[in-house]
Image (cartoon, rainbow, N blue to C red; front, top):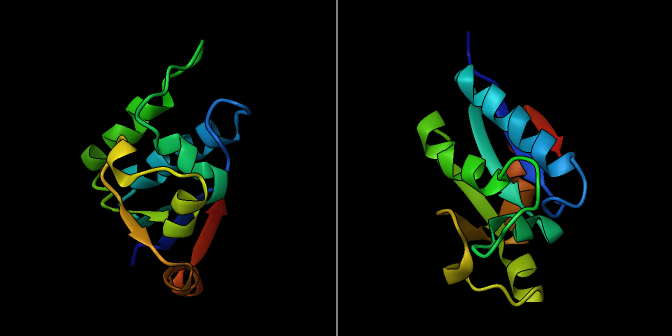
Length: 118
């Protein structure tokens, strides 16, 4: 069976609602089943990548994102315009990811078999 081409899009900031955490849970579940996965952090979702996070209560989402390599999730991207609009430097990101243009994001979404937005 051919693996699905899944694109997970994170647009929500961490910890303000459970949406971001639910997205990470779904991402890890899909990774267990050897799906082809790409992850894109867009808009306020780029705040999930900030190094200086200290959640109060609940699970530490940043630690879960740092474990993506163990799940063979290597296609991790961040929207370049979102970083610039929020004055976030790539040096301030807690996981390795590639900054990509809005056009590249559009192409990834167009070629995906399933898109999951969180």
